[in-house]
Every structure is written in structure tokens, then in C-alpha cells.
Length: 563
Image 1 (cartoon, rainbow, N blue to C red):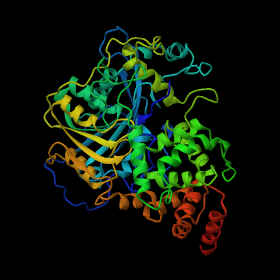
Image 2 (cartoon, rainbow, N blue to C red):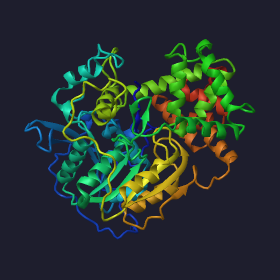
Image 3 (spheres, one colour):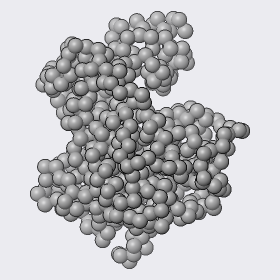
Image 4 (tube, rainbow, N blue to C red):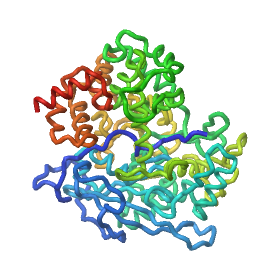
């Protein structure tokens, strides 16, 4: 059984927020905000906030802000008292104070299940609208058993996921926590966090599986629901016999990968900047059998051979984030010409992100023979939530049944409608689940981003970002069913394809600078990036991917000599 990564923590680059070295108080003058929300002081908190270094936070230079704080919160392992146990969990949290007139806080969950909240918050905050950063503390936590929270979900490195004893070994290694991993327990942790923050109501941003946690919380504590945004929502019937299934396994949502790949190919065919004059679906299909026989000599890292499974996984992961499609287009074109070096580089980058999803810059896995921390948590929480509905397979049979099982989405009565966001071509949580999810909640409005990727906020289009800002700042929401184009102001596929598959813009220039500065430690990264960014798309991709092609070498040599 494969791990389904359905969270926000591995998606996209860290986005610096432009506040490097700036104190949390922000700039001296800030324009007034268009909101009826009152300015409020930070309430007294029972969390002792301090330095984030012990939690593995990336450098200030990488994040662009020195304002992050970290701390821990002790919560009951069994908050409902069903077991009579007095065991506790210690939840790791992070917070960045509002940089202007404070209106409250926003709690973020990355999804998964098994995604770590701390690195997600550190990464996502820089892309959020400035008016939200001025008005709200941004807060997140590593859910119970995940990331820096303790005790951790653990498995036996000697027992692989395909072994009949895998879940039994995970239960034994995890201990009592294994019986308290379903959605209602994490929702209870959310309430504990709200209380510890001193907030009367909770503002919440939940991605993917985090939408289930948000809906679960809203059903349990409707009077505490403030502004809720649920992005990348699941099938609302997940957690029931009527929920979605795939090959006999209960799942959180239908598989949107085929539709996402078809849309990728459609946009690729619409522009000369992707597989010029070639049919994308034909190339993608032919390479599935050809890639194991292609050389990778222009890339120094692993893998030495791109096998069919690695190629398939790369295509699927590339559908979760369209921001790297220029690189994928180059890799497919190179492979069609007989060289898989760029494909190997992209697969290597995917593997590095998977290994480092825990927090900060350090890989978080269990050693050469073990699953990553994310995979172990994903398997265990999956079995806790959905295992009771699996009848055709024995994979989850050794789980500890929870006294509080996950429930399908229930109707809620909340003061402010919940904002539900779907991405039309989301490979993991297809956008057509959004109106279903909103209907199940009742007090909800849904909007659709016509893009490809897993989740829509922040940064892809002002249409989405503005509605989310309106939700948190208590402004009017649009009518149910608003649709936002893939890119702002772009309606035809040719222009859209040109934008998505072409380098030479500010995004590729910034990507080059980050790559040259972080990977190569080049002190002239900014100047070199400006020069290389004038090169053809393929050359820019090769420099980013560390492909030692003659063209990439010549471009770098010329740029360095001019700088």
C-alpha cells in the first residue's frame, strides 16, 4: 500500500516574507485595514514561547523573518476520559506575531494525515497576503505523534509496510498513543490550543486532511468557530461505508491524478514552450517504458537509473505543484531526446523533500532501512481513521481501535459561514468534492480554483487570496460557487501554457538566485541569476537542476565572468 501524501508541508519552496531582521512590531507606519474587526492585544497564553532553534527552524536568511517563536503544550492523551488514563502528549507549536494592528490569530494545519505543522507555517506564511500578516498571529502545531510532538508515532525499521506484521510493529513501537490517533483526538488538541492561546474563538486554516479536522472541531465546538478556511477538502463521506474506496481500501477522496495529468498535457500541447510540436500524452506514455534504458550521466546524484516506478511517482508528485512545470517540461524533452539526467535530478529533489519534511533543514527519517517519519504517521493515522471500513484487506487489522472514531462531515450551526476551497484539477482531493463538502457542513460557501495542484492558497491568484483575506478579516464573502482562473487575467490555454512552461520571468530569476546561493554558496548568486535568466528555458532548467550540459556550463561561465 502506497503512502498518500496529502498535505501542504512538502509543496513549493519556502517563500521569504521580506521582513528579515524586522522585529515583530513591523514597519513604523501601516495603512488602516478595511475591516470591522477590533484591534486586540495578545491575550495571556499558558504556552511559554521561546527560541525555535531546538525545533529545527531554518535560518532567518532563508525564511526572511526573525519573528518566529516556539513552545510546547501538554494535553491529555485521552481528552474524553474514556480510558481513565492520565497520560499526556506534548504538542510542539510555533507562532509569528502580527506585524501591525493585531486582530487575532490564525491556526494552520497542513493535512496529511501525518504532516508537520511547524515547517508548513514557516514555509507558507511568506506567501500569505500582507494584510493578514499585519492583522494576525500565524500559529501552527505538530499534531499528536508527528514531527516535534511527543510521544512520536514510530515503527520497526526491520518490518517493511508490505509485511503482514507492519501495523502490529508500529503499534508496539508507538505504545498507548496508538489508540488515540483518530480525527476527534486531534480536534480536541485544537480546542486545547485555542484555550492555551487565550482566544475566545478560533480562526483556522486547514489543508486537505486538515479540512476533516476543521469540520470535526466545528461539529464539536460550533460556538468557538470564528473564521474557518478549508482548502483542498476531502469527500465529506470519508469515514463511513458510503465514503470513497480504491481497490478495496477506504480513502479520503477520489483519485484526481488522471484528470490532472490530462490537463497538464492539454496545456503542454497549447504552447511551443513545452515539448515543441510533440504530443504530450504520447511522449509521457512512451517514456514509461523507455526511461529505464536512458543514461543519466549529466546528473551526479542518485538515481543512476530512472525506473518506471520512479518516473510514475515523479509525474504524480509534479501534479501537486505547477510551479515546477518548466523543469518537468525540460526533463520530458531531454528524455524524449534520449537522456534522463533531468528526470533523475527531479526525482532526487522529490526524495530530498520527502526526507526533510519533518522540520527545518535536517532530514527527518528513521535511517537507511526505515520509513520516513511522515510515512509512519500517515500509515498509523490512516489505519486509525479508515481501518474500520476496510473489509477486503488485512493491512490495518492490528490497529488499536479508538473509542472516538472519525465521522463523516456533519452539518454545523456557526456564526460565520465556513469558506471551502477546491482546486478543479487537484490530484489528491479533486475540486468537485468542494460543493459536496460545503453542502454537508450547511453553513458554508465554496469557491473553485481552476488550477492544477494540491490546494490553492496562498499565492496562485489574487482571486483566491482576496477571498481568504475577506474571510479572516470579516468582510463579505462571494456567492457560493465562485470560480477563479488558473492565473489572474489569463483565460486562453496558449497564454496559460506560455506562462506555466516558460522561464525568464521574475519567478525563474528568484529560483536561480535561491539555487545558486543555497546549493552552490555562490556570493554572486543575484548577479549570476540575472544573467542566466536571459538564457533559453532548457538552459535555465539545467542550471536549476544541476545538470552538467555543455549549454548550462557555458551560460554559467559567461555569467560568472560578467559578474
